[in-house]
Length: 203
Image 1 (tube, rainbow, N blue to C red):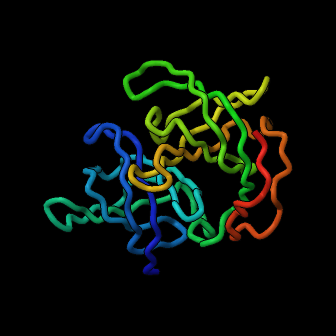
Image 2: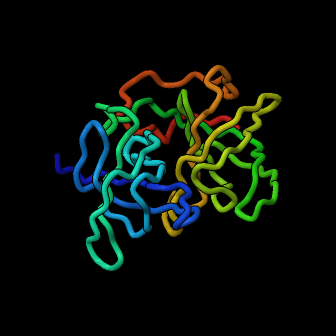
């Protein structure tokens, strides 16, 4: 069905190298979406698709290309298997506003290792939003987050756009579901309700 959903398409291809592009869907269904992209891709390329409304992410395959103009192409992206609820508007999980100091270990865009102090903005059972390391990472990278004596590996799934209130923020998704480094009670309420910024914060 026709539906405009803000998304991020990113990954690495032989033709374009590493790329990260904000876009909108033109049509969607349970098996994928049609999007307009400036990045040049080939049928068969595997990339990542992030639903910016819910932060849900899937690896997708390029299955269709329709040149729209000299700069843009309509690109059909298919999930590995149908995901009926991928385009729903509500979040999969509630986010709990919480400020926690963390240390992030990773590798920057030039291949140099870094160790960076940062803070969480909000938490969910599968991930978090961090402030302070956006320029050091890119979507798809794996970072190690330390909270006190606990640590866990996360994948960077989105980066706040420069010039917006989300600049220098990153969204991360946990790669070790059995680990809980936060030890913070998380919301179980309406996943579509925005977080209450007035809640108490722990440093």
